[in-house]
Image (tube, rainbow, N blue to C red; front, top):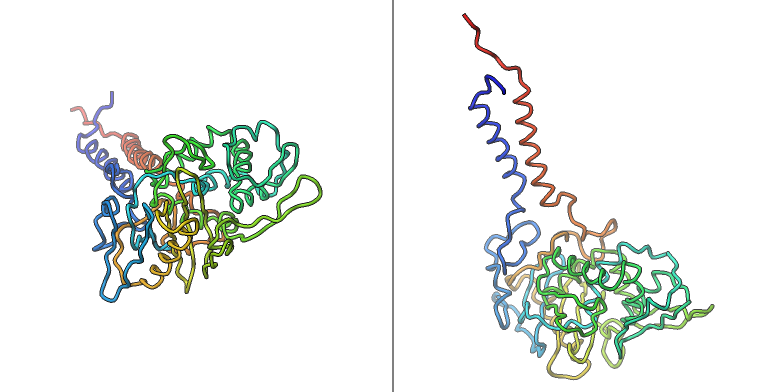
Length: 387
């Protein structure tokens, strides 16, 4: 029993606990379901309602003198400023659709940081099991030794599902990788994505959205390795012996293949195609110090090159629209910088975010208040003198 402990002291100490907790944990308040993540640096004054991107149809807020949006046949698309995260225009941004190989952007965000590029690995037979029929392949062979960097070039340039399978096994296995990708998507505020097959191969229930893919692309550009791989136009891939053969990036806006004119300033990111998803693309380009990221999912007109031409028209519109449109939302991916230009991050990848997690902030605040209570309890107690 503690004699002489004033009720006023107890109340004051408790208040200090609460004050410390409230001061340190504004970000720990639960995000209401369906709302977009808060943009880096907090909400913009006078900005759009956070649910605007969840509305169906095309969303754009032009100012006087703004260019008209181009005609785009894709089921879903989005164009955003990769530096600020502001979405300049979008169409059905959160519509859930099969992503095809654009899901490899999330695969790379999840797996790339844990596998050093220079490590050499000899491929085992079990690592190549379960590759879907008709998958794109780069030519990984059992018993042959590859550097991790070779396998990543196979992923980004040739969209090689064989390379994805090997890297996923090195990451703990196919199912483990899918679970980690799902967790990574949620940590970035990408709530439309459901991962079943890490390589993007069509699988029941596997979906993403133009919004989520733009988030993955934007975060990826802050990782120097990701940015370098996705911008590589051509490379060589080991043939398993002492030789190699050339591989060309299948992103036609980057390589200029099959009659598609290369886009000036393009810096990647990833294209995809399956019979269920149609053509999909997340691309980024940089001009005059400004970087845009564009997602185009499943054009309904124009043939095999439509996804590239529609992305081109959206990029052109985005660069012309600088300062002439109000944002309709924000990518707002946690862990990305609103000021650091993409593809210029020179140190550690920015996606990891602050070491002060919400749980840690709460615990720290609670500990601060608890320490105050302990200090108060250890103060000398004045007892009333007996007469």
